[in-house]
Structure formats: structure tokens, C-alpha cells
Amino acid sequence: MKLVIRWRPLVLIALTILGLALRLYGLNWDAGNNFHPDEREILFHVVAIAWPTSWSQFLDAAHSPLNPQFFAYGSFPIYLLAAVGAVLKHFFPSLGSFAHLTLVGRVISALFDSGTIALTALLALLLVEDEQPGRPRAWIVALLAAAFVLFTPLQLQLSHFYAVDTILVFFITFTVLACVALVKSERPLRWALLAGLGYGLALATKFSAAPLIVPLGLACGLRWWRQGSLAGWELLPLSLITSGLVFFVAMPYAFLDARDFIEQVSFQGDLARGLIDLPYVRQFAGTIPYLYELQNMVLWGQGVTLGLASLLGFLWLCGSLLLRRRLSAWLVPLSWIVVYGVITGGFYVKFMRYMLPLYPFLALLAALVGLQAQDWLRQWLTGTFREAQEQVRVGRERLALLIGYGLLGIVLAGTIFQGLALLNVYSEPNTRIMASRWIYSHLPPGSVLTYEQWDDPLPVPVDGHDPGIYRQATYLNAAGQPQTGLDLYGDDTPQKACTLAKLLPTVDAITMPTDRLDKSIPRLPARYPLTIRYYQLLFSGQLGFHLAAQFVVRPHLFGITLDDSGADESYSVFDHPVARIFVRDTPYPYTPPQLFEKLVAGVPWPQPVNASSCSFSAP
Image (cartoon, rainbow, N blue to C red; front, side):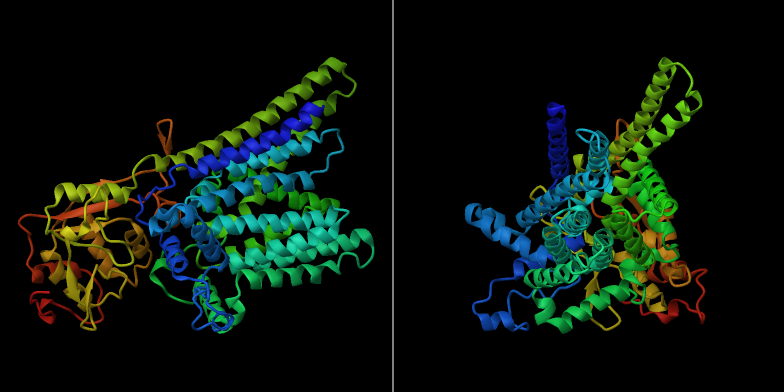
């Protein structure tokens, strides 16, 4: 028995180490090109901050070099990476470069997500009631939940980015764990302080952690209910004071630069609710709240088998607590799932990563319901044979165990398959790298290229090649200022058609490093009839360009490829987007006036338009 008891923690440690190894695999997936825009933005602020030279400079928010002046995310991840980078640079000077510092950040992200594996298992050990020696049932749930988190596809993916999500989930899981321990422990003061620590760091990572106050307050209420005195409620202000102090230390300019902090957080809140119109959120036009997030979580974020098991576990736990009318410690994580899910699921903006803070808890519920299924099967198979021979009952109990473990095996196998299939995209060069290599090999230096604004231009630096050997097409915008890239997210106007008609005949190739625009713009047909017409002509070869190269990498394993083209854009657009290169036909078949007429044909304008409204001089 002692050997078994000691063996289980070793398995948990092994699972955590394996999780870290998988999360470190293919970490330089973009070959130093920083393709993730959020990660890139964070790194810009990391390299810009510095330690103030005096206390007065620290307090001067407008001039302090420690003020990131960026509050879309919390300051803690910025300070953490800056501090780690500063220490490592003394031993490895090359780590001071932007690209190498990005890799350091990704290692930190992987470490935090690996820590979430262990925290989820510890949470299971706290919650699952098991009086047997060695607590085998609790350990089964704990190890199974850890394995689910280990192979969860979205967690594997987001560990490859330094975009705060894995850090946020770690501190949220830590805080909920401390809240559960506060309910059940004989030393609640310690856990109240730790809950405050976790809550403060979660808030300093991303302000969307604010709803953690609900499980924290509920934990104190459950503690009070069990003790029958003020021993629970008096811990709540202690935790909140601790949270406030930690938040101030980790994000001081939320107070010292309060006006900017409030404005930026309010802006992000308005953006999430669809009150602000920016191009990168137009992909969510027409999507259904809650259903869209649930669909992406089940099909791709957690994977089909784990997603369905998590949903079943959530429904079972809700029903069980309602039927038994029990004030159980399970209410603490359940309250987080419900409150955060209701708030975030109703947003207009529905990036898959927004639901990541629920994933460890849902994985725990999937493991719990899997074990409960074994009990149901045992009761069902043996319930009608109470008077039967002992040998028959034992055989049916073994059959119940076999079926139960088989179902758990299916859920785990499905999760492993989808997780490793997604991880396998890092075994191949990024599609933008492949597209850049094709450009260097097939388009002569001096070729004129164009791209789509709100996306990155191609080619990128790779294999020693310099993108400067090509020229990005330049034109004058409505304000008379020169700019590059096709403004396809701009409003559809006759002037937009004129610009395209004048520019495209001068371009040798149109590069599309992702399908970000051509998938989101068609969701707004009333707003973008001209641009939709442009894409129809381009993809059908009627625009005077042909598809010369296309690069596609999908999640794949054992010869099976998963078509994730229907998943949320953010699932593929960073690390495995579809990249296309359209090359101009020779000779080009249209004059600018002819191209204009082709673009506007069938487009409903308030007033008739024709080529005479454009000045077709050189762009």
C-alpha cells in the first residue's frame, strides 16, 4: 500500500514533465518572425520598459520608463518577461534580442501551463471524497484530469505563444484551488492569503479574472456555514486586501496611471461587447452567443471526446448538487464555470482563448463523470443479481469496470489524438515561411507585390533572404497619403473600386499570408458587396491573376488530417493559416477602365457608377 501511495504522485510528476516537453516542442514555430500580433505587442512593451532612476520618476506615470502604458493585458506578464530576460542576458547576451526574448516568453508560457496540469490534479484530490486507504478514487480522478489537461489541444497551442492566456489560467486555477482548501482546511488563514495572492496576480495578468470574487466569496460563505460562526466571512476582507496589495505591486500603474488604465479597460470591454467596430472582430458578425463558443470548444478547443465528456460532467454535477441540495465544496469551481461562462459567452467577440479559463475545471468534471459512470454501470449490472452467486456478481462488477475504463480510454484517446494532431503542425515549417521561400524561388527581384492591410506582408526574412529585394505597391489613400497594402476592410465606395482598378494592373503578385480577410468579409454582405465581388473574381481567375501557390497545414496524425477550416479564425491564423500567392497573368487581360467595370458589375450602388468617374493616371 505504501508503494502504491508513493507511486501515484510520481505519475503526476511524470505527466507534468511530459506536458512541459510537449509544450516546448516546436517553440520556434515562426522562425523568429513573430507572427502572433498579441505576442508581438507584448514584446514591444517588454523591451521598452526600464527601471526608474528615482522614486519621483516612478511616481510620475507620464514619464516613468516602468509604466508600460498598455493595459489591454495586465502588467505582470510584461514585468515578468522583462525581469527574466534581464537576468538571463547577463549570462547569455544573445537572449537580449527581440526574437530570442520571444522564445524565453514562450518557455515561460509553457511552464505555467504545465503547472496548471499539476494544479488541476491537486484540485481533484481536494474535492473528491474518498475514505479508502490511499484514496484510490480521488487519485484516479486527479490523474485522469491531469492527463486531459496535458493533451487538451487549445492549451498545447496557446503554450506556444506568450500572450498571457496560460499565465492567466494558472493563477485562476491556483485561486480556485486555494478557495476550495479554504473551505475544507483546518488552517483557513493560510489559504485565504494564498487565494488573495492568486486573485491579485490573476487580475494583474488580465482584468477578465475579476469574476473570481464570486468563488472567493462563496468559499468564505461555505466556511462560515460549516463553522457556524464568523470564522468564514472575516476571511473575505483579508483575501481582498491581500489581492489589492498584490495587484498594486504587480501592476502599480493601474493606480498611478488610473485614468489611462480605466480608459483602456473600458475600451476592451466595449470592444468585447461589440460596441466598437474594428476590422479584426468583424469575423464574429452573425455568430450566436454561447453556441459559437460551445461548438468551438467541443470540436477543437478540448476535442470532441473531452468536450462531450466535459459537458456531460457539468450537467451531472449541476443535477447532483440540485437533487441532493448539498452545500458542497464543488460549488466553488462550479460557480466559476457558471459566472465566467455566462459573462464571457455573451460577448460579441468570441475568440476561443476567452474560454480557456474554464478548460481545467471542465476537464476535472469530465474525469469525475467518467468515474461516476463506472458506479452507474456497476449498480445497473449487479442490482438485479443481489441474490445470485458471488461469482456472478464479481464477474458483472469486473465487466462494469472494464466498460467504464473503456469509455474513459476512448475519451482520453480522442483527446490525445486531437492534441498531438494539432501539435504536429509544428513539425512542418509555418505556411508563411513556405510561401516566402516560394516567392524567393519563383519571383524575380524587383517584382511588385501587394498584400492585405490588417495582415502581414510577404515575403518574410528566411534562409538569409531579404524582403527588400521586392517592392510593395504604393498608392495614395483618400487623404492623399502614400500607403501600401490593399485596404479591403475599408468601406466599399466607388473610390475603392477606382483604387483597385488602377493598382492591380501594376502588381506582379498578390500575397495572402492568411485567410483572415477572405473568411471574415463575406460575413457582412450588405457592407462589403464590392469586396466580396473582388474575392469572387480573384478566386475564380477572372481578375487577371491566377493561384500560383497555396500552402496548407492542418492538424494531422497517423495519416489522418483534421479539416479545421470551420473553426474560429484564431485557431489557425497564427500558427497554421492557409497562405496563397496569386500571380498576374501575362499579358494582363484588362485595362484599368475594363477592370473597374468588372469589379462594379452587379454591385448595388446608391447611384450609377462607371469608369468615367475615375482618373486612370498612374497610381
